[in-house]
Amino acid sequence: MPNNPQMFKGTSEEASYVRNKLIEYNAMHVPNGIYEEVNLCLKNDNGDIIAGLVGAICWNWMEIDILWVEEKHRKLGLGKRLLHEAEKIAKLKECAFIKLNTFSFQAPEFYKKYGYQEMAVIENAPLGSNHYYFKKDLK
Image (tube, rainbow, N blue to C red; front, side, top):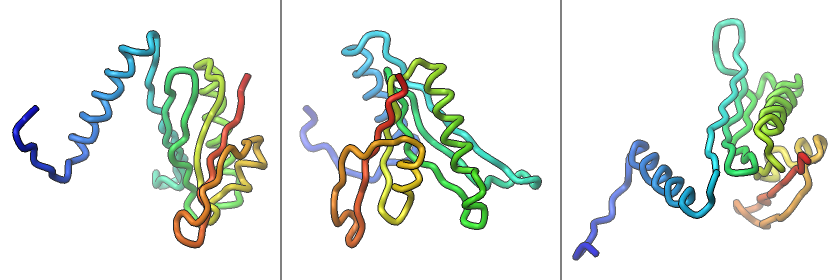
């Protein structure tokens, strides 16, 4: 071990390096595993992104990290379109389930509406809100 490793704030490139090293390590322990990013965008006529979904397929599941819709475009079915497309991709990739998390001030009811089951709640995280974890079985 180095004598005295120095701590510093890493760059986004360094974060990617760390992520890839963990993926490499995991692959040694879980054969035939996959890691594939899933990034979806909806754009307006000017080419501006008005909604998007960021996630990844890991082994036999999809994890949705972010689903965002620009505020003035909410309640128009864009989130539903993104979620359904992600589910379609997950099924094509033979994922068994999708997991995600959201806050009480974001969209827990939205996910429940589309069949996501609440698995856990951390109360008062962030302060005054709750942090929800959801899963939807696909098989």
